[in-house]
Image (cartoon, rainbow, N blue to C red; front, side):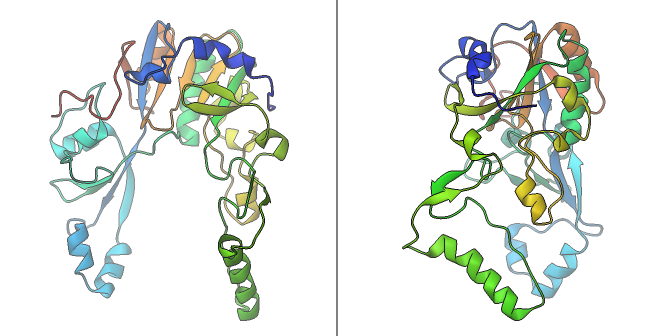
Length: 322
C-alpha cells in the first residue's frame, strides 16, 4: 500500500459526480446498478435507576451527585431503528437523524433524551469503525475481479493528517509525570507553541510525510483527498488499521492504541463498486452490482438499506418524520 502522486486513477469519479450537492451525487458517483446506505451507529447512555439528567438538571446538581452518576453511566452502541423506536418515529431508507430524534429547529440534534430517559448521541460523521469497515469489505471482495488491486482516498482536511507550515502543531498530546519540575517543563512545552506570538512559521509534522503532505491531491467537487494504492482485501482484515500508511503513529508514541481513519473513498481497480464515507454524512454509501447491495443490506452486523440513484441525503430530506 503506497501513496500515489499521479491522481489520474480517480479521474473517473469526477466524471460521475454532480457539481451541486442537491442529491448524494455531489459525492457518490452516478451510474451503478444499485446503492446501499450503511447507517453509522449512535451511542445511547443510560442510568440504572433514573433518567439521564437534562442539561438544566445537571447544572443545578451538586458536584458529589454528578460524580455518583458519572460512575453509573452505561454507554452502548445503538442502531437507528432502536433510536426511532425510543422516540416513536419511523426508520426508513431516507431517514435523517435530527428527525428521528424529534429535534425542534432551535435545539441541538447531536444529543437528545428520549421519552424513556435515555440519552442518544448522534452517529459519527464521515468515519467507519474498523470492525464495521471490515464487515463491509468482506462483501466487497466477492464482487470484484481485482481484490488485490485498488485505491483508497483519505480526505485531506482531517486534523493531524498532513504536515504544514505554521506557528504551532494542529494538535498536542498531554503527558503527565509525578516529578513536579518535569511536569512544569512539559506544561511550558505544550503551552508555548500555541501562545508565542513571536514564533516564526516552521514545518509542523503530521501523520503523513512532508512529501505526501505537499504532494498532489485527488480533487473532487469541494473536496481534496490523498490517494493511495490499496488492495481491497486489506480491509477485510479487522486489523487493517495496522497496515495503512496513514496509521496514527504519532499518537501511538504518546501511549494511544493503534488507530487510523477509515478511507473516505475505496474502490477496486476494475471499478465494479465504490464505497463513499463523505465527511458530512452519518452513513456510508456503497454503489455496485445488485447482488452486492442485497448482501450488505442482509448482513446482521450492519444496519443498511437500499436506496435509489438520485437519493437526497441532506439534513431536511426526511419527509416521513416531520
